[in-house]
Image (cartoon, rainbow, N blue to C red; front, side, top):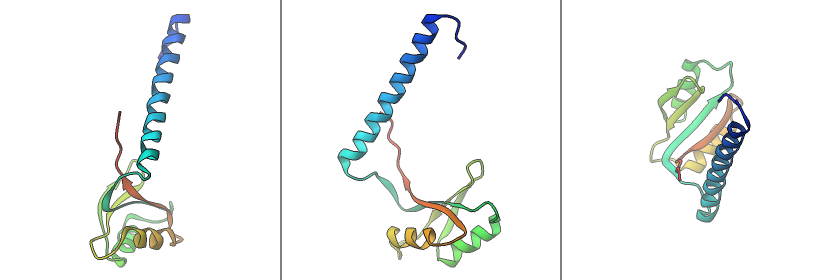
Length: 112
């Protein structure tokens, strides 16, 4: 956005307010629900930078899970854990590995 005059600044500020209001509404909506919704049986996992794709695949399969997709631009793996294991179990397992930066449920986003 190129700022040419005071009206441009005001327009930019209004857009920022709208975006912030939208983010606040989403957060309040999540809070009212008590929990954020997620895709059952799926995790998003980011491994440490030194872990290769092959290593990541092996770590995931050793747990009995499978990589559905690798989001290369984010360095994140979408993982299906299967029905025999709970999401909490899988989160504890992957978060406990030194090779993992983070592991989170695959949260659903709702745009309002």
